[in-house]
Length: 259
Image (cartoon, rainbow, N blue to C red; front, side, top):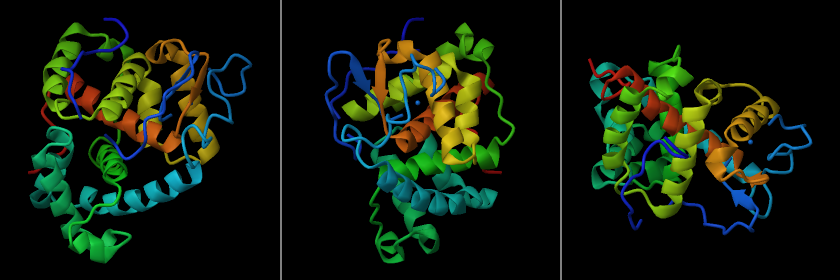
C-alpha cells in the first residue's frame, strides 16, 4: 500500500468549504509532530487563518450540529434505520440526502432552527453528517479499538476498498480529497484517530491530538512542511474514516444496530 488505502474512481462532484490552492510547499487540509516541536508541520497558528476560515465560527456551527446529532444517536432500535442510511449509504447520494431530511424532520426539536428542520432545510450538511458519525461512534462503539495491525491487514484493506470505492462514487472533489487524507491518517495512526473521534477533552488537548496525527502521518499530505486546517472539519473527517475502517476491521456492514 502506498499513500492511500484505496483509489476510488475519479468523479466530478463539494462540501460547504471553498477549495484553496496551497503554495508549493504547503498543503491545506481541513485539520494538527507534537504541536510545540520546532519541526512540527502544525503549530498553534495553523487554525483559523485566512487560509482556512474562522475557527470560531466552525466550532459554533459544529456545536449546534452535535447537539442535534445526539438525538438520533440516542433513538431506540426501531428508529435507527434512517441514521444507518445517513451514515452507511453512498455519500452525497439521493438516498443519503433523503435520510438526512427525514432525520432533520424527525428530530426538529433538537435542531438549532426548528422551523427550518420541519421544512427539511439543512444549513450545514457536512457538519451535521460529521456530528452524526461522531455521536454514532460514541453511542454504538464506545469501547472501539482500532490498531495498526488491523489497518495494515490485507483482508481488512480489501474489505475497506470494496466497500468504500462504491460509497465514494458521488463524493465531490474537495470532499474526496479531505476524505482520502483522513483515510490515510487513520490507516497510519488508528489509535490516535479513535481518541480524536471519541474525545470530549478541551480544545487545547484536541489540537495536540490533531497535531500528533498529522505529524506522524505526514506522508498523507505529501510530507508537507507546513499544514493549515480547520480543526473541527479535520475531526469529523477523521471520525468518518475511523467509522469506515472499523466496519472493515469488524467485517460488518454497519456499526448501528437496528434490532
